[in-house]
Image (cartoon, rainbow, N blue to C red):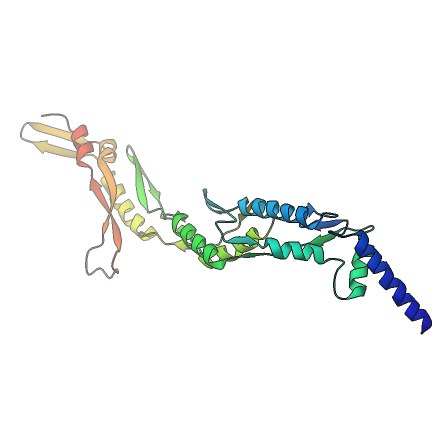
Length: 272
């Protein structure tokens, strides 16, 4: 028993002596990636304030295809609590449990102790940003059409677009804000369906191939003009128009129609 009491008294004396010898932050303490060991409270506070400014200015970018939206951590609601962070750094070696406090002091002789800043993210600011980004970063769907090159025609099938999903963006951005340094987040998206379908392209392609299959002679009072397939290809175009009522499509439905461009037609027909 006497040996245990002596050991406890020795440990207590050692702890008191170390605390007196180390009035500021323990040696080898890092606040995140910043070394603060040995700083007194005034210098520690100034260091934490600079860290807060640096972290607030770091950026997070969301991307979709070749588009990007970037905001600073501050704009995303990042807050580093300077007072609480200073207290956390100074608390190492000063815990109420003397054994824990002594262990921190002994560790400081040879090992680095990393203390994380006290930081948080205001969800209201983060969610508002994510909603704005989801509205602005949109890949529009590509509609089906035909491309004419003289007497030849090629189909262009419709392709879906994309729109960012807000909830995954909020979660990824929150994690990025709390990681030191600029960051680019992975974003999930939902497809945006085109208004046209491959079947619509099939229909106008069949019409176009029939129109290009043979010459057409145009007669008028003062003569005639023969439209070769290459001429026909110059004046044809595909238009996207509202679907006719009663075709079973919902509101906003469209269809592809093969049409003649009057301007190009006037360029092809010889003047009277």
